[in-house]
Length: 212
Image 1: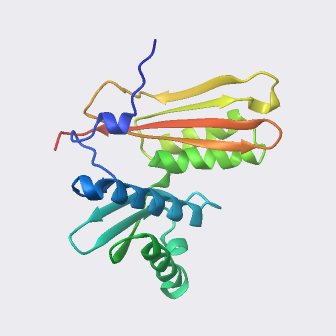
Image 2 (image 1 turned 90 degrees about the vertical axis):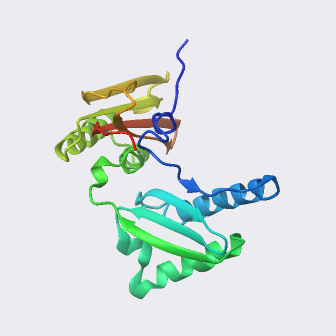
Image 3 (image 1 turned 135 degrees about the vertical axis):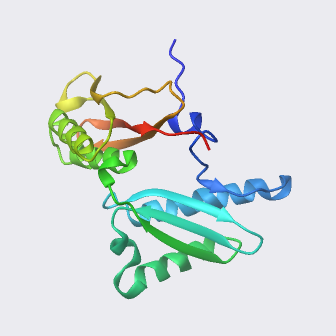
């Protein structure tokens, strides 16, 4: 029986870090955790129409919550004249228990971000694109961007087939058991009309990194 572990959580405190960074006692932990989940859901929902958000990091201090949004298109998040970021800040402050500061950081190479690659493939599948073409193009673009390896798995009723199946494509090497290996991972869902949900998983190997 296969024992599956998320490649990012597997490497925490080796060279990866938590997406939420704060410390709380028993009284506040559940409330702050629920707040973080709602903040992430709000940001993701606001930009759900196009896959631009790669990562959302939340840090808490005694009197401030800092939300850092890593995005492929900073202009879409900030909006014209900063209107988008102001509106987003107001929406987050309705959820949060402390004042909020928002930082926006641009992802230089979206082809090397597993979340953006997985969501891009999922959106293509929703538009009835051929899964082999979509995965092959994504893998090629990622390798051209400088990745050492990529693995993509899609599972479901592919190309309107009667029976669900799993297909995968691997380019280069993806050493999942090597803790030094810098591997980005994400899974996405494509809600395909007529066939239901097709799952997409993406692993991207960017090379080895030394421990912190």
